[in-house]
Image 1 (cartoon, rainbow, N blue to C red):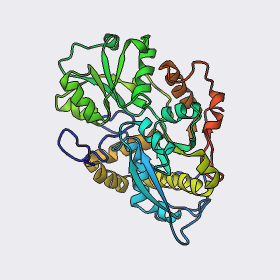
Image 2 (image 1 turned 90 degrees about the vertical axis):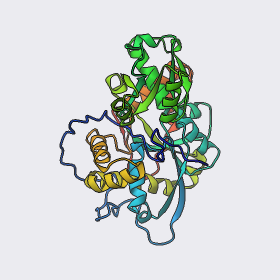
Image 3 (image 1 turned 60 degrees about the vertical axis):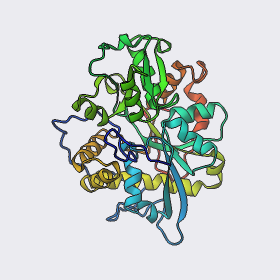
Image 4 (image 1 turned 45 degrees about the vertical axis):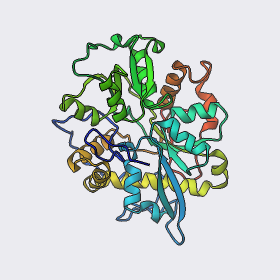
Length: 366
C-alpha cells in the first residue's frame, strides 16, 4: 500500500501532531524530570523500572498496536518506547499496525482481531461498546484538546463560526475527535450541529485537498500542520479548538474484552511500559524529540517544542479523566451517535483496568 504523502510529497507516517497550540515565538521553559511511576519500582537509565510489569527474563511476547492517526504526537510515547526498547525490557515485542482515517477505523481493527491493541480517540470505542461490541478500554493514552483547528482558504468569506451554518466541514471520520470537537465547538457558540454538514475526508492532507477543490468549506488540521498551512499562505484558522474545549479524554488504549480476560498480565505490561515510556520521554526531551523528529519527518526543534508543550500540559498519561470522558459522551450524544438517554454510569463496563496497571480515574468517578 502506498504511503500517505503531505503537501511536500514527504512520507506521512508520523507527520501531524496534537496538543496545545504551538506558540512559534516562544515555549515556556520548564524543568521536567521523570514522573514517579504509578506502578512502583526504581528507574534505570533506559526509563524501564523494576516494578509491576517485571523485566525481560526470556522470550518476548509479540503484540501489535494500531494507531488512529499516523503522524500524531499523541503516539510519541509509543514510538519512543519502541525505539528505546522500553517495551522489550518489559518482555514485549511491539509492532505497529497502521489504520489511518480516524478512531473508527482503528476500533474496527480491534473488533476484527487484526491487532492486539489500538489507540483511537475515545468516541469510537464508546460507540462500539454501546453497540455491544467486544471492546474494552484498559488505560488512557492522552488527555487534552488535541491541538486541533479548523481552517479555511485564505480568501474564504467565512470569518465567524456562525457562518458555517449550511456549509461543509471536513472531518477525518464520523466517530473521530475531529468530529466530536466540531460538535462541541458548535454547541459552545449556540449552533445546532445538524445545521453544519460534516464530510469525511480522512487525513489532514486529504482535507486540505478537498478544501482547495471546493469540496468542503473548511477542514480539520492538527498543529503544527495548521501553522504550516498558514505560514505558507495556504489556509487561515477559523476555529482553534482549545479556545472552546477545556477537558478531553482524547486517546485511550483499546483491546478486545474477551482477550483481556485471558491475557490480563500482557495487557498490564503494555500499559505499564507505555507509562514508563512517558516518564523516560519527559526526562529526556531532547533525545525523545530526536526520535520523534525522525519518524515525523519534521525538525528536531519543532519536535522538542511539541513534546515539551504536551509534557507541561500533562497530556501524556495512562490515567483517565472523568470530566474528559463526560465531554466525549456529551459530544457523541449531541451528534446523535448514541442514545440521548446514555449516562456516564452506563459506561462502567467499557473500562477494564488490568491488575497492576498504572491507571487512575481522575476528577470524579463513573
